[in-house]
Length: 292
Image (cartoon, rainbow, N blue to C red; front, side, top):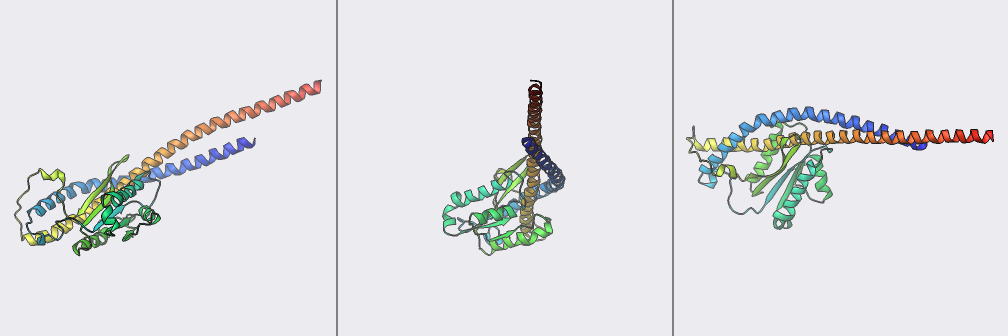
């Protein structure tokens, strides 16, 4: 009967785990709906603003007029890795950290060995990973995603933009998961600075804008605003992707727990049947011994 007790204990343990994973799935589903709505509502505005930004950037002839555009081979590079503060979301965080390692050890290996590549981490999981790999971080913010809104993100984004303007870095890359749907996240390594015309816009017509009141004022206001929206959109995409990944992971975990409970219940029934059979044989054997 000791074996039966162990199986009963394990069944109870798996049922308890199933309740937790099921609850986490529902919580993630609720958070996903809110994050997904925020991303979907921002995308059209951000996309149009980006297109205007790229057209304006194309129309600026002198590099001095646009402090966020820089030519030449980048020597100092900043990588911003966006992960999550919590786990239990499948390969969500692993994909980002692996991509950062690939950039450090492959694409920018020369610059990294010379000490010209820096990493900033957004999210506790990324911060913990980089510390475990002895990768020195220029900075980290593990709370910004828990209170994410445009106003709270502005100081962080402006700091990165100012570092670029001060020529601390020649290139800024954001590594994050872009939200496609609850079950699919697209790993993205996106150049944030300097402003670069994306491939999808290269074949489009470059509009010759009439600037009102003045070109300098428009450039001064619109380009920084567009860059802030672009970075904020990456944060929202990552947050929505995180909730989708966690919901999917908890859904799979709940299904696995259901299957395991079914198998354990079957094993328990077989063991119980065997125990009862043994008891009957013992009783019959004892009765026969008394009759003899």
